[in-house]
Length: 416
Ligand code: AMP
Image 1 (cartoon, rainbow, N blue to C red):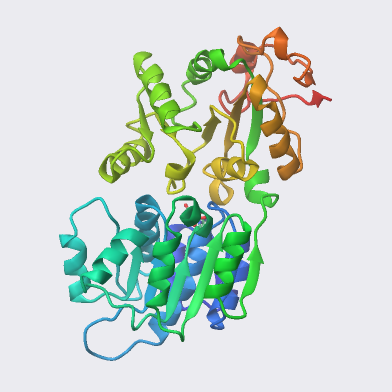
Image 2 (tube, rainbow, N blue to C red; image 1 turned 135 degrees about the horizontal axis):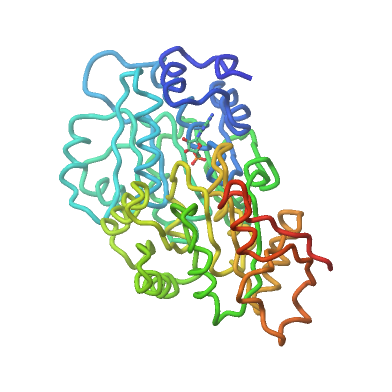
């Protein structure tokens, strides 16, 4: 189905074409018609599904079709998102898709001087994309009025909850006009989030893009069984491959991320960490270096990684297996975005076997094991470790692969 059949206006179609989008992703196909009818939407979708365009396109279209004449621009759309990285990315998307609409946006986040943000608000702006803390702060100082907001998006609601932003979010919502269109997105729907959604939305239409849909299925996934103490050696071994130009490595903790960066740096691999203890500026710089491929490995914790959108990111490495299975889906969703190629390699130690089990239950498939690496799991865990076939050494796979780095991750079925 082309974008045109979703009744998108010409100026937006033109920019989508320039972005190289040929057809809508499933969430766009479902959400855009609902939103163009003015209905509220409850979207259960992870990043990487094309979620941003699913809300940005209809917002741009509706604001552009119903434009007040004359006077200073009023803030008619508000997008609340948990992290600075996400806010910047969303703003970039609005700018790209709205290039020919004449609508303007500004991005508001903490950790930086407020001067640039307040002067842009003072000039008047159609769309505000903000993280909750700084927005509330600027509202308190009288720089932002939400009186004219017609469309409101709460993005990544579950992360807002995780990051302790729920009260700020509720306060902001209390300043919105009653009469408005609301959009609510969350990758997971724990009870608290469902409750919050009920307070924000009015007769919403629901759109669910589940982890089983093609975005995740298209990602090649392998598990490497290894002892905890040998994970660092395994990481160096895996990265000893020029075909892995960049890789996003996940750890469970901030401390773990710093340790991995130290090990990589000591071994002459350019690496930077991005996590909650780093300032916004440092995080943004690390992300920019990674996008520009100046940094080969970006090591991230889950919360920090939510804002990461890197085109052509092919490799995600789970240095530690997440204990919440949905997190695995979010992590690997950083690669293979919108139909691109993606490979996810997970390092699983004995203590993490139950987490792996939960993940396989959630994604409803067995992740093939890559066995023939030099650091197999030691004897003490062998009973717990599923038996596996072997298909020759990792190195021979590496050498014989016609397209090295792409084909070498040929996993095998595990025998249960
Ligand atoms: P999101 O889920 O919004 O973070 O988007 C994931 C990625 O998909 C972004 O890099 C977008 O630029 C890209 N994208 C969004 N919609 C499309 C589309 N219809 N066709 C191709 N790429 C898309």
